[in-house]
Image 1 (cartoon, rainbow, N blue to C red):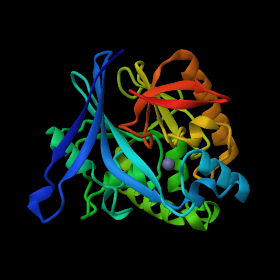
Image 2: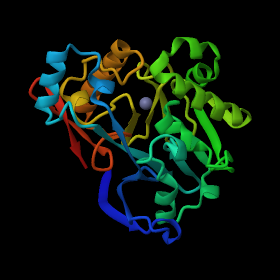
Image 3: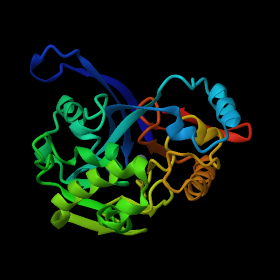
Image 4: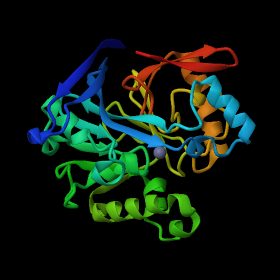
Length: 299
Ligand SMILES: [Zn+2]
């Protein structure tokens, strides 16, 4: 494994529309015949209750204070989409939020443009799960597929969950829009979707790993030099300090906590790098033990 460099890419926003200049951090990892870049899709701003609403109020306040988070300010979640380039593949892991989710996200097309990668050149899109910030960028503002040439890959369990009408009745009011947005997009591309299961190898050097709890069929991907964890390690603070804590950002909080604690112990012991969709500073780093828990050490 060779950590090469971190770059700050800056690029002018499209067509000089009186928009401010935007910046994308890109962290790079090279080895095993592939190059991995994390590209920023922007960030989400979430109410603290989205994450900590499962905890008793006093405990939530204590945990937030310990991490320097304010109960009165939104939680900022950076969004890192991973680009894999090898001799014959140009693949994305997730596609960001697209134009319809939050005004602070949906910047992947501009980030790709800054790297000189045209959407038509993407050969594969591999999804960790079906949440808006990972999936909704699949269609552009005209509802046309943004990556027309790409083979699409998603865990079979995950695909079934988001396309099953029964999910509308079971997912709960707070996430009903997630279901509507996912089912519409997945139905639009259903004939191009290839289903994967635990242990499958969608691309050379990429092994799927079922990591349920955040969503029913969430997949991590072992890339050898790094484990791409998607949202099963979903933030850079409490997920590391208290991995076994049940969090409201997971659809099955208890199951997700078990998955997270297991992965965290494994990564700390092996020293394998991880790539997290919502982790800070580009999302690539390692897990270090600290006190009773762990911390994220950016590359
Ligand atoms: Zn998610």
